[in-house]
Amino acid sequence: MDSTTTAFHNDNDDDDSQRPKVPTFSAERRTTETPDQFVYKNRLPTNPTNNQQGQWFKNTGYKQTNNAHYNVKLLSDLAGDFSHLLNRTDISDCWLNVNGTYMAVHRCILAARSSTFSAIMSGNDSRLSPDTIKELQPSEKNDKLEISITKASPEIMKQVIIFMYTTECELNETNAYDLHEAAGRYGIKSLKNYTAEFLINHINPKNFVNLIKIADKYRHQTLKNRCIEYFIDHGKEVTDMTGSWTEFCSEHKGIVSELLYWTVHKDKFHEQVERSQLQSQW
Image (cartoon, rainbow, N blue to C red):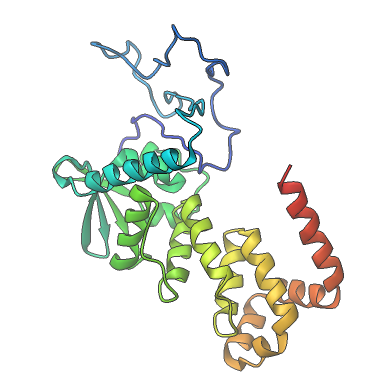
């Protein structure tokens, strides 16, 4: 498939080093100026953009009012509008083929909400793992882009899509782990944080091994710190889960060493966590 479409970029992208240098809008808004770099009026640009020349628009962060309640209502209205958009399958331009179940979506939403889908659709996928590129290889079907999803169930992916459009989804102890895994795999930062907050409050000896593995895999330090803290306080209960703990020890020796180190140096661990929390507030 030719990669000649416009590059997509969003706040989920972790690496800015490859972004072209582009002009940004002034911090002070002038009443006679409006951002118009993305508007081509009645003609297309002479030199069409390509994968290395994406158009850029910077959200300057203006607020219409300081009324917090009104701002919440605006966001709620926006989520409602996007939920209606999700049901507009007649204007969708992309299929997600989730293990044989097709879901009609819109490319611009995927690109804005997911760094992984953005990279796949723009062709700038060099930072993705070969496994992810192979799974999400796009193709054309009935004049629409089709992306295959093989590592998430239709029900999980349905909730992922609903979250991308509305910032809400059905979240419970049954699906939280799979949603967090999908958020990490498909680069949806806000969903990863949303599910991590839920999981942090539901750690137990039975799910501990899976949680610390996924926290380490997708570099979610807050969740990993909470797992380490749980192990410091409940290590015996975790290690008593003989089957899962034995397998975990053989496959993840690095994480096990880290857990044992912090158990011995728990005061140092707590000091380090407190220091990082203070730094994050500045």
